[in-house]
Length: 247
Image (cartoon, rainbow, N blue to C red):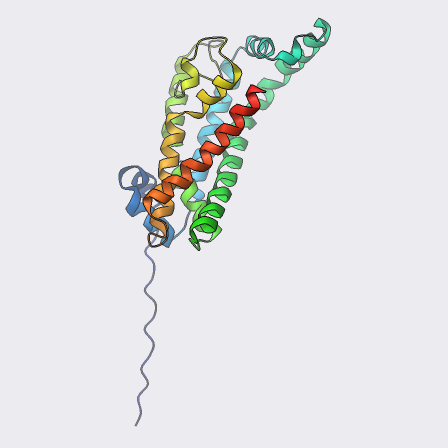
């Protein structure tokens, strides 16, 4: 009598420890990103970044002297040089009125859109240039976890904002983690844009993007190529941004 051999049931995937993943990309990124590629997840790091960015935005809105900030911005923008004073005053009053009310939206919206767009760009680039064959869910999960250094910078930013007195917050340079914060006042706009691009936590995230995509498909994506794509695309963006500011 013939016997039928049952097909063994597939081994169940262990549950994801999302917080261990967020610490893992800092302490052991290659192993952690390999696990992320096997079981993509992005909700926890994304929500954490959005919540902290909202807290930062609220504090900036409360502690910034918006009139002084926009006056300084107008003085550095050549398109206001020949504008009648009454028109300048109307624009300034409008900015001062709406900035505190809308500033709390800027952080979460900017963070969410940035992660989505950057994830799409790098997912497409690694698939196109290296034939990685990764799904967008995997690429987005890698990108979301590569932004974990932003959690560290957010905690530092919140601490600084809580300490600083009201009216002494510069929304652009209060964390001082980019070269732009150390440029002399009145530096050329193109140089300021270049300095903004050289930012500690962003460069850390670029390193993690390279490690993450290389770990997701190590057969097709070697570390050197991963760093070349991660930093090469960033360099193209910086050149375009600085060139536009110099015009």
